[in-house]
Image (cartoon, rainbow, N blue to C red; front, side):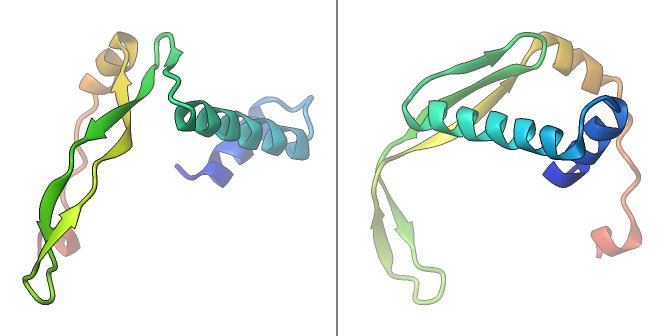
Length: 104
């Protein structure tokens, strides 16, 4: 599901709200979450999961074209940990069979 699909579904379910208002709300929510993570805050949404930052230490990587070693600096990366309710909900989902295109 894309952001625009989410906005469209929410606007249909909440018919008393204008699509523009739903769009603004979703974009504001994502902007606020991004800002909170950027300032090092942890975000917890009960029943869904939590977003936090994990530190990746510096390491030596490799340039795939030349094979040369490249020093990569340490960095913080976003991390999502699903909550118990979400884990239980998706554990019952059966994976879709792989199509012929994906297995080739």
